Length: 184
Length: 248
Image 1 (spheres, rainbow over the protein chains, first blue to last red):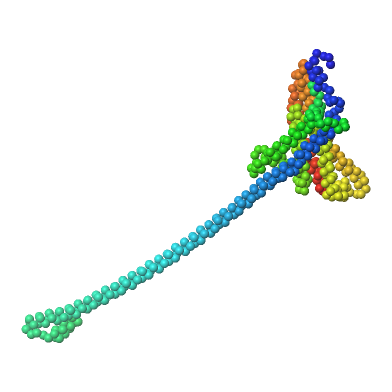
Image 2: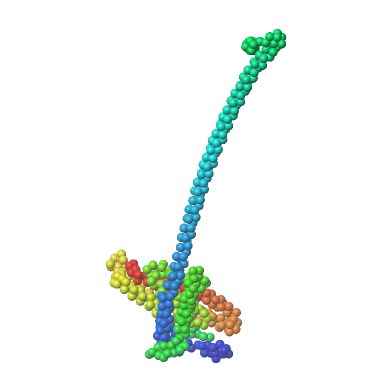
């Protein structure tokens, strides 16, 4: 021990002898009571804290979060179902509207067709009536014109005969003569 | 240089007098027990004071710790074992924090004393026995009688079961105590080698070897600190499972 390395041996000497009795510290029974006392106090407090505060609080936090997440998921699923329902309803109303519009278009087309047909028939009937009337007028004019022609011819013949002969023929003779020539 | 076992000495800070041979005092051991419980309270009570739906960093850590212990209890002791969650939680956190605080240089390791680990193991085993008998009465002793075995075999098997049951608290306490003690001694010795070699002339060139070993051992000791806390908690759960379901 009495070597030149005094510094190292010196520290060994001061720190060297372990405990007072020289016993291994974990087997020094005189410290047991004190350790047990403090263990009971500190661990007892920790157990009380865990039982009354830590475990209930953390359990509540985690349960709360789990229920919140579950609730949100349910809500999202409900909303999705609702949206799908709305989509289906929209599709349905769209199809209905389309069918309705087609029906209306068809109806309108039919109505317009019928109306125009009717009007055409009316116009045709009117035209036919006018045509018939015009033909009638023509026929009447012609017959009246023809009868005038006979009268004029009879008069003209009477005048001519009177000039040539100096004798005025009777109306009946001239008329018969005109008639016989026009028909001959 | 200090002796490798000096770090385990119990030193009174405030003495309250003696009962017989035993000194009742506020010791370094008591101080570190209070530090451990204080840090646990800080993390799990102060850290969760907001009860946030979206946790912050400290609350996340507290939740992870809680879920880890709760998961261990659920897996090992079953759903009806959840009523022991506060006990297992306290045991796991106390041992874990005591072990980890012991890794701080100069700190005292509460769990390196057999009396502390033995007291915790005794707490577990008495909980098992008292709860088992209170709940199942004499049926609790069916734990020692394996079912479906020839009656003659029971003459051999029952004593084995009894011995295995009795050795549980011993193994539970000695495992933790020995791991912490041996780890800290090994660290101290290898760290001591570094200093010794540095002052041994030419041998100083070898000093990085024990230094590297000390670094590696420190990492190993952190693993052991966490692992031993977990082992203590898991074994507690398994023993509690026996109390809940004594039938094999």
